[in-house]
Amino acid sequence: MTAAAKPIKRKNTAIADRYDIAIIGGGPVGMALALALRDTGISSVLLEARGVPEKDEDPRPLALSHGSYLILKRLGVWDKLSNRTPITQIHISNRGSLGQTVLTPEDAGVPALGYVVNYHDLFCSIHHQLTGSATDYLAGALVTRLDTDKNSGTVTFDYQGKEHQLSAKLLVLADGGKLAKQLPDISYCEHDYRQWAVVANVKAETKQTGTAYERFTADGPVALLPNLDDFALVWTVSPDEVKEITALSEPEFLARLHEHFGDRLGKFIAAGKRSAFPLALKYAQSTATQRVALIGNAAQTLHPVAGQGFNLGLRDAFELAGEVIHAKSQSLEIGKPAMLTKYQQKRQFDSSAVRLFTDSLIKLFSNDNELLKHACGLGLIALDRMPPLKRFVARRMIFGARG
Ligand SMILES: Cc1cc2nc3c(=O)[nH]c(=O)nc-3n(C[C@H](O)[C@H](O)[C@H](O)COP(=O)(O)OP(=O)(O)OC[C@H]3O[C@@H](n4cnc5c(N)ncnc54)[C@H](O)[C@@H]3O)c2cc1C
Image 1 (cartoon, rainbow, N blue to C red):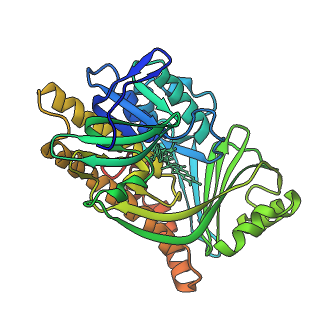
Image 2 (image 1 turned 30 degrees about the horizontal axis):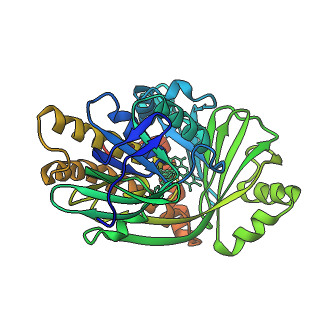
């Protein structure tokens, strides 16, 4: 420890210096874990670097699977989300080949394939639910250092211009993956896709009717998700193009998108603010170490194709909460190696399978090779004609690797 731990007062809440769980990072996954642990008798604190929810609006759309809907409903968040658009079918095609397939709720045996929400709306809804609970929640607390021994973990953080510390039996990293580099046993595999996602709301001549379009091209996929009356665009572009595409005038941007996506929705007639995100695959080789567990983007950051990252992170949070609650109910100490090994083993299959699925989609479909392009097109035709295979794929997109 570098300084004596001091209790912090925030509104009427005294932040203690010792907890069962300290969650580092209050993005949607970290907050979901905090919510899952409320009213369980497990003491937890959430430390978030940004002054939430006043942070900049993050415009990215999130396609939530039916499985995430069920978890968010259980956490009491779903009914607070005002803007959510059901996905009634998913149309998948490959530019330059004939193959296409359509997934419907009947294929997967669920009432809706998923829902589109905005990251910022989801963030605000979980935040609202959390501030109404007894969870200790510090916004504007930047964690700078992690220390662990076999009995506990210690977090050093800056808050209101001072350095503070607190300790917990388990530190959960939900910070997107920067802090784990301080831990000797955690290392990441990284692959830069050399692609960026340009995100914007767009209006087309054809109104949205609940269909989500995923179109693969040699430069990467372009997705148009139903979003209220319009579409949320996630357009993968090369690093050379990203500056140019985000700087185009609106009519030029709309024409370029039309040329790229094709005529399925007619012309595009309006676009909102554009934002761009670099895309990489990054995953921790081990998602737990002495008194530490990783969840969400801290455990794995995926390409947004097929909209799996948050859905997977939410399952991390939910399964970790289950292990912690189980340990408590059996009077076992939280954060012991046996508990962490169990968490890690439970998540391994789902995480590896989803990672492999998204990574293979990008590697197979983002290429100019004519033979491969036609093979992918034939694959889509085959998928369309084989209901059991369709059901297999649809359920894995919705519920994760165990379908
Ligand atoms: C363009 C795009 C589209 C996407 N679409 C989808 C989709 O359709 N469906 C889907 O499931 N997923 C999608 N994703 C992925 C999804 O956005 C992420 O998986 C999800 O945001 C991860 O949430 P998280 O809480 O783990 O991490 P983050 O959202 O990154 O949150 C991490 C939090 O930790 C805080 N933090 C960081 N460092 C510190 C520190 N030192 N101290 C304290 N706090 C700290 C940050 O301020 C932040 O609030 C998409 C991603 C992109 C880029």
